[in-house]
Length: 338
Ligand code: ADE
Ligand code: ZN
Image 1 (spheres, rainbow, N blue to C red):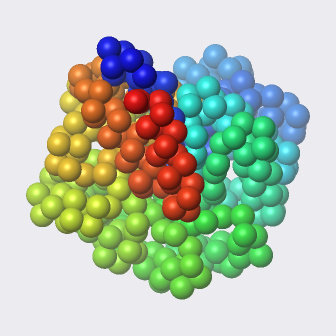
Image 2: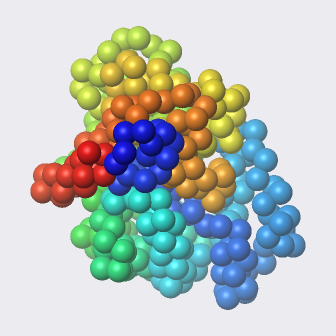
C-alpha cells in the first residue's frame, strides 16, 4: 500500500487477527430485542434506545451487570449461531482474517441452556465464516471468576464431550477479589488436556494478578494486562517471555480504566518491547469493533505506520494458529503493506 497513506487508514485496511472478543459482548441492542421477541423473554428496558442509554459504565462491574442481562435472550442453538454470524459479518468489514472468540458457558447453563446448544451454535457459525467469508477462527471457553473453582471444574467436565470445538480456556468476569490463583487446579487440568490457556489479568486488578496468571495458571497470553506498567520487573518478564497482551483500548475508556484515550498505555507497551495487540473486547457495548479501536487509538496516541504494522504482526504472532496459517497471514499483511 502507498506509504503516504495515513496510519489510521492503513490500520483499517490491513488484515488483522482479533484475539480478545467476548461473543456475548457483540450482541447489539437490535439483536437483543429481536431475540427477546423470538424467545418470549422480557427485558428490563422498553426499547433499543433505552437500553443503549444505559450503556454509561463507571467500572467493570457496572458493565457486567448489563452484559449478563443482555445475554439472557440467548436460549437456543440458532440464537448462538445468529449472534456469532452477526459478529463475523462485522469482522469481515474490518478486514479481520482470523479471530479467537471467547464464550461464557456458565452464563447460559445456569439458566438451563444445554452446553451443546451454546457450543454447537457458535461452532457452526465459525465453520460458515470459514466457508463464506474466508475468516479462520477458534473458540475459547471462559470460566467466570466470580463463581467457585468447583463450578469451573464442573463446567469443564460438561464441555468435554464437545472438546473438538474449542481450543482453549480463559478466565473472565469480576476481577478484583478473584485472583487467578483461585483457579490453579482447573487450569492445571486444562493444560493436562492439551488446552491452550489465557486469562484476564491487570484490567482493574493489580500487577500481582498478572504474575499469578503467568506463574500459577501458566497463561500463554494475558487479556488486558495494562496495569503491568506499574511493575518494571513484570514488564521485563513479559518482554523476556514474549507473552502477548490482548489490549482493548475502547473498553478501557468505557470502563474508566483510562480517563482519556490520549492517556492510554498502548504506546508505552509497544515502546517497552511487549507483544501488545489491539482488540474490541465487547464491541456492542464499548462503541466500536476492531477498526474503531485501531483508528481511535492511532489518532489519540499519534501512532506511526511502523506501530500499526507491528500491532498487526503481533496479532498474528500471538494467535494460536498453525505455523502454516501464520505464514499465510503474515504474507497477507506483507502484500497489503508492501
Ligand atoms: N467479560 C466480558 N468482558 C469482560 C471484561 N472486559 N473483563 C472481564 N470480563 C469480561
Ligand atoms: Zn475481556
